[in-house]
Image (tube, rainbow, N blue to C red; front, side, top):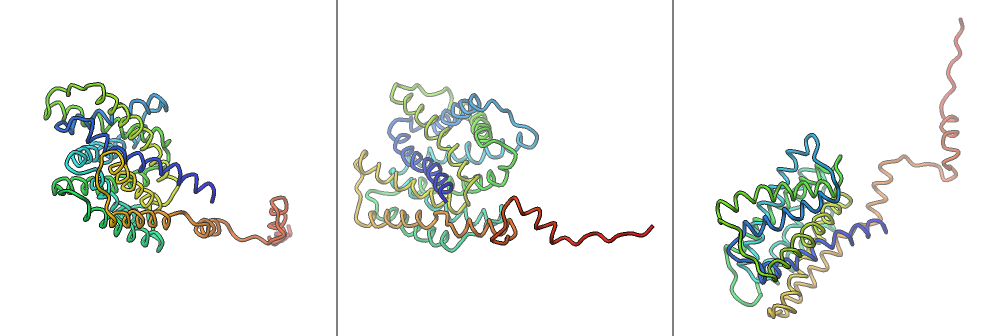
Length: 320
């Protein structure tokens, strides 16, 4: 159980950091260059991780990296960048909180992880909290911004579960590096054709890109994919609800966005959903029992082979 909690704590780094990413993107990065913004986020992060792991893709991982890079990086980053520029920090981050339910349904179909009652209850409670925060925030809500954020949620949910399905046989740091590098390489020529020369960046923008690439991408995605490898998709999806909590609190404290009483109730419900998704000792015990046959309480590792020999009938003698 303690091991599971450590994986939960590590995974939680990702949504908390992503919650800050909306504010950094909106306040410090150029608003009219979403393609270059996404490329400058992904490619440096992927190259840094490649320098750390020093592994190249092998076999099927060449095309798998391309597919995952397109879903989890290229398309996802552009949509998130656009949503960050069109929506308030609180709204952009709360739309993504619908992803736990999407991840559970996709995981059920792709990796045969049937969502538990507690996970479904956590997703339902979290969705209610999302609605409270989304529908009662101050200021107008951009419909294109909401659509971009919702599309990002669906694309990434599918990509995350696909990465979980393909996780065997590849180091998590290496597979994360391959995805980010492939996604950045896809984005760079498209950005050059569509948006022209790279944008001129001042010192605050350079520092912001450094934070977005190294912390909100390289470190956060490594933590996220590590969690997907060791925890059920439903648990990881519900941990992702910490994203809107961080976004709303940061928008209130730093950006001066108004936090209403109903939004506070929504935050409480979101946190309750996260708690419901925690790994349980019963679930771990059940999987342990399923994988090994029960032994007599007096058995020890030293006597197990003797016990099996006693239970095995002696071979019949042959007459020649």
